[in-house]
Amino acid sequence: LLSLEYSDGIDCLCSCLSGHQATYRCLDCYTSKPCCSVCMVETHRSLPFHRIEFWNGLHFERAALDAIGLRIYLGHDGVICPGVSAEGKTVEVHEVKLSIAHLNGIHTLHVVPCWCRGPRQAKQDMVEQLIRARLFPATLSNPTTAYTIELLEHWHLESLQSKKSTWDYWQALCQKSAKGVDRVRVSGRYTAFLRAGRQWRVLKMLIRSGQAHAIDKHLPTNRWPGSVVVVCPACPEPEFNLQENWEELLSNPEHRYKFILWHGTDGMFKTYLKVKRRDKDDDSLLSGQAFFPTREDWEKYCADHSEIEQNGPCPSYDKMHKIHNMNDREVSGLSAVCCIRHSIFAARGMVDLKLGEKY
Ligand SMILES: [Zn+2]
Ligand SMILES: [Zn+2]
Ligand SMILES: [Zn+2]
Ligand SMILES: [Zn+2]
Image (cartoon, rainbow, N blue to C red):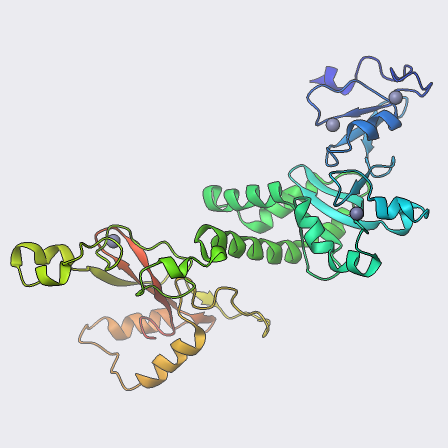
């Protein structure tokens, strides 16, 4: 491992015969011969997130591709937009400084948008241009931060498979940040990453469920419109997995059992929500499209059924209410409906519990 701290050929003349010293090496290229800064930029036009090092005469130190002149050109497969070069002004007039998070850390890079449709349109098209370049912007207006699609896919997988929290994921990424990145400042960008991650999950759900392609018109009519949840494929459902004459067969005891839908409901008190400061504009991005009903539907349902006596005959009922009625909890748990033969949760089948098992 110690031998990796040095590279043969460092500080000699670069093989490009330009007369420059070969003082840079790349840590992410599988084979990387030391080279000069010009060659380093040229070989990394389509690899802008590689981490590079500079030989200072005694040891290697972190360097940045942006600092030695690498720019990301949008809209023309990595080549500078003819609209920018035709203006005769320097590229610096058009470039935008972006903080870009990738699998190997957070980088500061300058991006030159496509100006083919004029300067005003270039600003409006920025989000689209970034996404076409596989960079997901943190905001939709004048983005200064972006995440690579590879990073968001990796984070999504880590959170689902390894159960890693977004906070831990982001802090690890900040530790790996490239030279020139203010680590304290980027660690404060956690909320922006959280927000972009939330949008990413919703967009993936809309695509995977087919809603992005308006799939509802091909689905059974009893499904919730716009729903992104996976419906149990094995439970009987008209227009989906039942034979044409299923209604006629209902009267036949030999067949009736095939058409029974077995649903079960249970509560879970570990999924409580503590009282927190909340952004009043923090609306659901999937209101009623997934496992919870819309807030309006739910409040109306509770108001219409407020007279139901919720203290059942069970002697532990009151005791349970007391245990779960802690002052710091806004929601004492949740109750969910699932098909009991296949354990698949039902669309709009979950509700928040307010007090013990009460809703
Ligand atoms: Zn490289
Ligand atoms: Zn060179
Ligand atoms: Zn262009
Ligand atoms: Zn089922």
